[in-house]
Image (cartoon, rainbow, N blue to C red; front, side, top):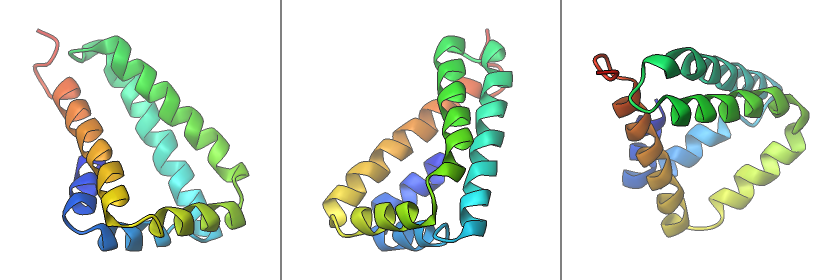
Length: 117
């Protein structure tokens, strides 16, 4: 999912902005919270069987903690951040999307079956 969103952002930054805008509501904040908690938990659980267990565990903890604090960001702050990010321009958006793409590919490589050989 992270790599797919990153790829979308590299190819079509406007589409990624549209995705981000979908989280600019109370429901969107709760969905983001849930996704972060689930992804973080999944990475923590998958870490021991991964190619790089320490890195996967740390990323899982960071993502999980991001999920814990997400509800306290507040709707207004989320809207400001998305607006700020969307106004930075395509090169900026593509750079951040590239980081998401790289992170997603790294995680896929790290946790694919057969990784702990």
